[in-house]
Length: 292
Image (cartoon, rainbow, N blue to C red; front, side, top):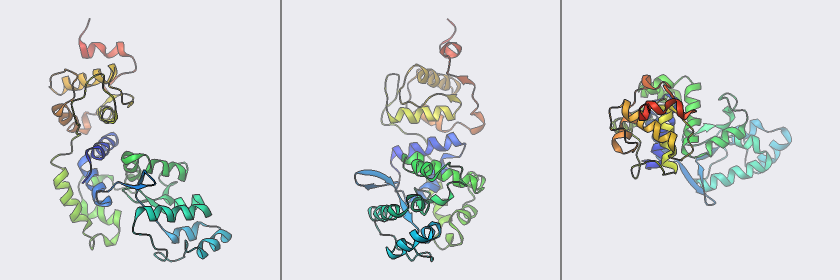
């Protein structure tokens, strides 16, 4: 199971992309086993898997010979075993990177979606460095990477329509049935479908700051109230909250508690059209506070 912080990041990322949060939470949990990070040298790092046969293919002849002698490359999949621990896998990756960093990173699957680095160009990244930067940018970065793969592979509708068997076949390959991926996804969705809402540790209001405010701002932007996700609950965020509360039939007090979050999480995709701009405060102030 994900922590509330990870869950909130996945929900906000899903809403910004127009994907059902419960469905994305489902796939993220099944693919990652609920584990998003590994502690490596005191830092939270994404889960990885190094593929020696990719490394063998991507290396120039001289470097390939060095990698083969070091036990880091082979023409056959599975010949280069991955250590059981993530710390061991990062050490393996770093050894390969000393021979050729770009080839090593491209030969690695990254993050909770286990997306191969070698797909970086196909997925629209300018470089392998850009893909790795996303993978190392917290849970939201890992989810963005996974979503790119889902969308590029034509699986977005399968995800939103909960076609778990077809989705698992496309995402996990022919072995999906043996590993019960589709059944595990269906079970996870039954859980998340009941409660795919943002959660906070305490009500949020003007003057507070932090990661929870960032996630609130991301969710408001996804709902059509565009703003900078700077983590500061200032004038613009307060106005957006009040505008949303008024539209949702809530008391427009600017205080974000459970009721506001539940409504925000349940906002239908078709309602998420930018009706307010917060670039000029004087243009929208009357919409929120009344004409002066």
